[in-house]
Amino acid sequence: MLMKKIMKKVLVELLKDSKKSDRKLAELVGVSQPTVTRTRSRLVKEGVIKEFTVIPDFTEMGFEILAINCFRTRVSKEVSAKAREKTMASPNILFSARCQGGGKNGITISLHRNYTEYSKFISTVLSEGADEIEEHETYLISLKDFIAKPFSLKYIAELFEKQ
Image (cartoon, rainbow, N blue to C red; front, side, top):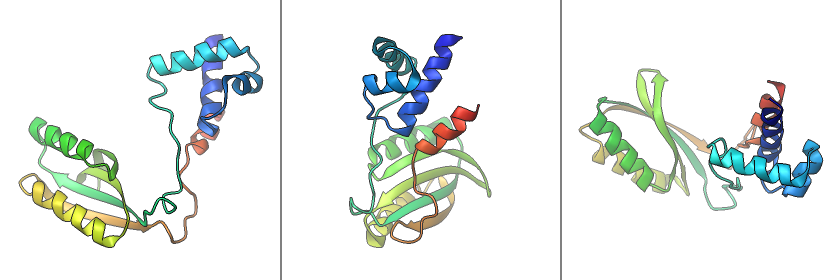
């Protein structure tokens, strides 16, 4: 039980800032550096941590639009396999999954440099999926407009700490 508590504390600190050194994590969690190193390794080995990455300012990278596309598609193993293959091959797509609500059963979240790029992207998606996609709806978010809460994983750390 103690190890789970340490794992949770290390995970919370990494969610707040994944570039923290094991020395700094040990100081924050109140355990030795070797314990943190073993704990971090265990979190990765057990699949709790999938990857260590940065969250950049997308506008500084040249992206102006975040698109949320909702689809109603035929449901079959073949359609799911094709959707997985197509979304994995598209670096614009950040997330893709089955979903529920509004009569839709699939969702993608993607980044685009401008509306022209988005328009070409969605035209390709719809033409390649013409046999499977029954309905489609898009929400476009300007990354240069008002954002009430920027994307960050540090917020989930606060939620996780309260559990």
